[in-house]
Length: 154
Figure 1 (tube, rainbow, N blue to C red):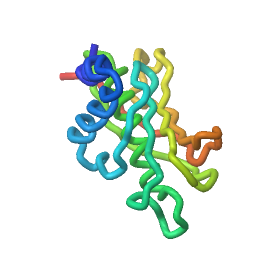
Figure 2: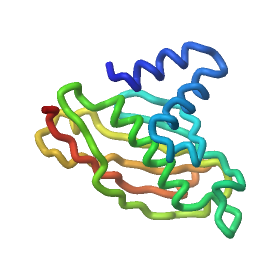
Figure 3: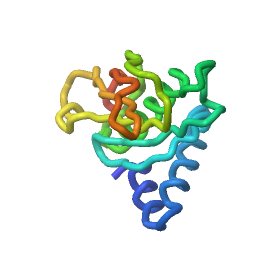
Figure 4: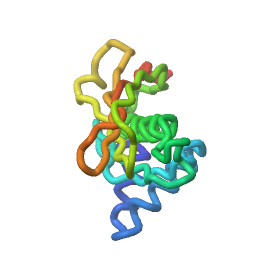
């Protein structure tokens, strides 16, 4: 089991504050993620979810959640998923992101990253991670793919 997944399980054993503690620790590992204050709700191999709250600090001139803040949330979800899913004999690095903005982000956005288990055991180093952001009513406000480069550890 990976270090990130172990940390998620240990912190979530503490009711009501475990996810918050994990989210803070995760954002400290990659400080830029702290700018959107991600709140993780799900972390397991091949799936991660977090919430980016709609607050003034992440708003654009329209008063909605800024597209780049959403990309930051998607990348945080992808990073947690990758850490929870990558086999011990491999390493990963992001190599690109393609997203479409499909609706205004008028409220809190749940950022979701997903892969299939078979993707991690293939020989192709290019691994696409499906990502999307949804409002509470299910409206998709952003969707796309973050491409990883997965190679053997030396």
